[in-house]
Length: 109
Image 1: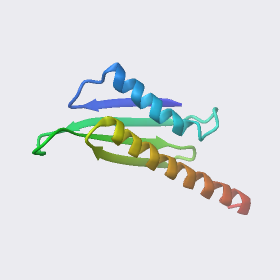
Image 2: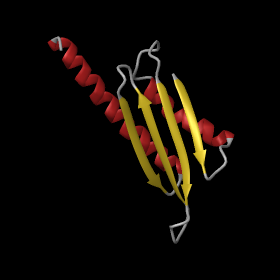
Image 3: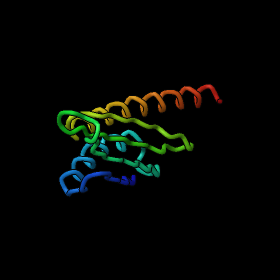
């Protein structure tokens, strides 16, 4: 599993890198170890159009076996909350993807 992290309008600190690794590695555990997963995470700080406080955006894309792309995005008041939202959205999508593929394999499609 490979995690690519991109930061926009902020500095990618070691704390942010560890936070992303901690949250996103849980998604990789849903796949076999030999699958070549590529997970791209973008962290962004959007403040220019908000009147109060900082708003942080997290976006993640997972390229799953078979060429399909799963994507999730969340904007919240801190990175922890936005990463939690993204992780939960991706976990649901991965579970649906795996259920659908297992049904298709059983049917012989």
